[in-house]
Image (cartoon, rainbow, N blue to C red; front, side):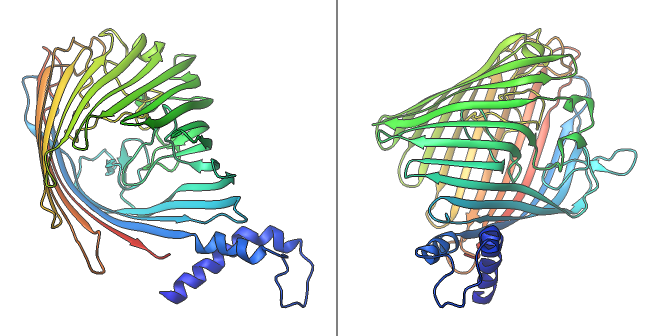
Length: 455
């Protein structure tokens, strides 16, 4: 291990300093050719570096009732076992100024019996690489996710540029087990009062399961844009924490002509005491083509830590959307197409539905028990109703309900410390409007995540 770490450090150092070495004279001198302070700067770049990763095996069955409301038989959609090997290198800062972040993952299918197209390709599971937006051949592949230079400007300001991830204002990340990739930059400044102001801009995004957005050739992936940017303000003031953002996507084209979208984020959380907190979250998008104007999710969250072992959360979500909108459902992201980008929305129930029909009010409750010995058990239930019929979508639900649960175990010590095993199950039942697809669903998933570190 010591030899491997040394070799890795040497290769990273070589790549980082090739330019400066090329400009140096050849000196027969015991001192560093870089001059006073050079060795310390190199030490910061190398010795502050981390090289981490994880091996993930994801095995899943997901079925759906695909027909009209009268035909709710569950049929297989996804049935696979897939692996990821995720790798991330994060350097320290050379001369306390510049560093390098690299990330990527290897993937492939162990087996895949998901539904197939006419060519024998299987439905994209979004964990292994896919050759189009919908289909994969399951072959072994590698996807770089992060290639970025990072900078420090004093103690309070930092920046990065290249192939990066989101997390500023209204720009979030598209996730599988690896993140999606934006081509752009971001910069942030921390103030002494607990406030951070950040800006991000990008001209390209690729979902983690696609090597290139142009590979998504299906018409429902059709979307182009010229520039996406957002400003975000986060921080805390005593028991109150906040996250505000406003963003804009320029020259968005869904195939009907170009337009500019605006996106908005308002989040506030108040800790009543150490055990109890309440929060409000809003993510909204002004999109004329897809939503006929402004549409949004509004959420209320109550979190209660009952004691050291038991916790409870109760969350309510309302979808503000015109039933005549072209898309027929709301997606909390700056541009509407699936996988093309993501927003920054905090409510997610791992319950198969997005609970996002026009006017829908959904309520989810979950109880969690952590034994303190590595075992965690979750049990949740959600119900949504009050929706208006989506006029322009093939699916639309008067009401829907789901139950889901997890059994999780994490190894507590030894060489495999942190390795986690998770069994997840969901049953989703829907009452569709007449003539609309029912889309009842079932999900059973077993995930193993084994983290590792070399530096």
